[in-house]
Image (cartoon, rainbow, N blue to C red; front, side):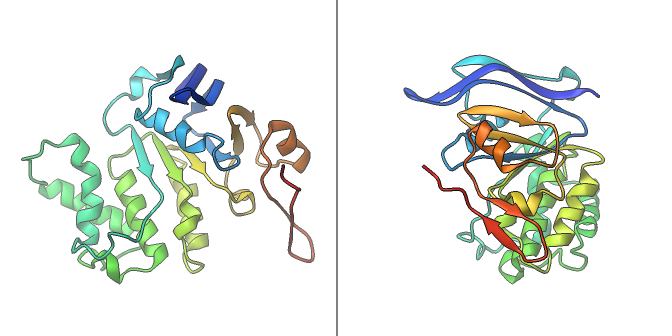
Length: 248
């Protein structure tokens, strides 16, 4: 399977503060990887390096030259409710995902709008193209921004804590949609909730300054501790409960 990118002995810092150290990591075309770790461990920095927003201080990230291009990566950031009152339609938000490949003065074509209509249909938002963001539920908003991330047909989709804004009505449908998208793109999903994503990801990257890759969707508390990821682990049984390790 062809690789999307690979990191080789990569380190990153903010000033003198090393955030990622000696990271060796590879993402292939069909991967669905959950990125987990404690707050401040370097998960967001990892995404910023992939997006080209931060340059490593040593080592390198190498992208597959056959997958180069402005729309090779789709990105779904954490959603803020701060600007949802702005008068913009669902269609316009999704179309904005194509602006990276357009000149500022270029108008959207009929083909662009037809593609946006197809994305709206795919996201389960039929008939809502003219709706404003303020009219939507949390799950619907997440689908709109997911649509914006994939309208450019990326080879890699980056998701930053997508579960934070998914309401219970859309939760299962949202992750089923990611499963379908994984058939045509690799997915790297940052999450603090292993219990929510464990049924969907194929493997884990535990990030806590170092990066440890776990090539399975099943991960134990002992492995998390060995990787230096002191986060909560959900256990499954006849009585739903959460086991918390005492954090230092």
